[in-house]
Image 1 (tube, rainbow over the protein chains, first blue to last red):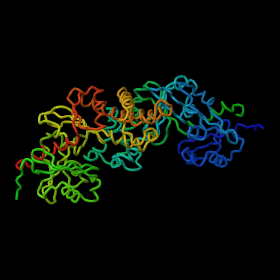
Image 2 (image 1 turned 90 degrees about the vertical axis):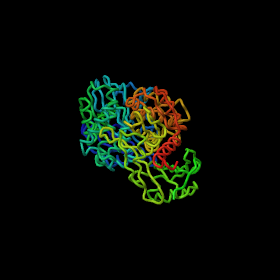
Image 3 (image 1 turned 60 degrees about the vertical axis):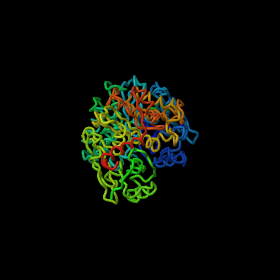
Image 4 (image 1 turned 120 degrees about the vertical axis):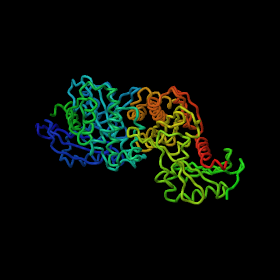
Length: 310
Length: 310
């Protein structure tokens, strides 16, 4: 029995299921968001507790009926996730993502979008979740660069709607492990995000842009500058952010070029830091919200999968 | 009462007192090593247990009488150590190190050599312990570069016996925190030192030398290459070593030049890796043992301090 949906009736549930977070939206066919449910039950949590109960719980919270289809992106499709959605290999068109979706052996119509793999021995790389954001923020003929800051920042070169090259920078994770587990624990205040003070952030950025191979000595200089009284511990987090984000952008600029239009997927403090750093390095930035990008990508793919229902 | 020493009688005790290790040698005036005592009572240990009892214990093990003078280098002279031996500032002649030694308020004649500080706001840096190794391996008129690999690798430019520039790279510490606390915990086998297999080490080295700004993405590629089946986890440690040592040498080569003679202070596996990497990058390497370098530096400084007794 096929339900008939009006444009404002629930058409599907969009889910962004990451490593450590879960976000679901009940969507109408016209792209209107009807309800939202979020939690900390990411892949790592569900690997022990199971995925189906977590989804059922959130569907109930959304007030979604059992026959509303569900489209998931992110780590739930990893080998260690709910069900593996094998990577699509680059180069690949973003509007072909839906063709790689797998259907989960569970109640209802639940599908997971694939990630992307760059299976080149010289530049191996993978993503899961960001490909859906890319679909969300690009037109079918888009050519340019997209930057997605985060724990593992992604830079993606897109040519006429197809992903042709991408790279991952461990920027956010390095910030965390260096500030928590290295000698820099003495030089960076816990909880500092680096966004409070623009001066030290810009100073860190400028120093690494002037000498972009010097990261592993610049990290020690951050500590030495405090020992010698040139800098304050309260500025350490901002300076460390400047060094790591600057190292990322300096390399990405050389690899991807600064001539093409750049879309930055990110909001809040981190988005601000990247916007500022990208402007300093000559990029013309167009910013979009990360969650909105995921939702839009899921809507586009859902329309391709269940088009007749919208 | 002053004891009279023959050339083979105990003249002084040389101590290299680091962050996490203690090494002492009972030395004759002619530079002969008469006895050795070592332990894990580094600065971190002694900050709670006290320094004087640890030294007394090792002096007893060495069979040193109470009136034999003691010369210490390393972190025991840090602000958080036994007694602060303020940094000498660069540029400074190495044969002037002894003049910065401080005498500890304790029984007997116990002195600590100073570290070096580069108090330049653009290149702040510090060392404690390595300055004594530099004194040990250089002639009074030496000009060239010295590389001291380790947790915090040091590169030092020396001109006619004076330290004029130096830089610290967090190479060894980054290897530890990245392999133990980042996503690369899945890509690097515990305990791997990177020295077992030359192939992956050389591959990591070559990839970072070809793109020396790419470290933070090369780290993620190490993981991605394993996910995609291009590389084995058993090669992860060697490849990570190649990336980090390569990033250090690429930057140091640009900063210090590869034209001058280079002395490498290091032995064992780490020394081998650096010797190989330095040869690949065009350095003409002359290698010396790190402990011998410390001992020789302490002997030179001791002769300047207590010359009349030798």
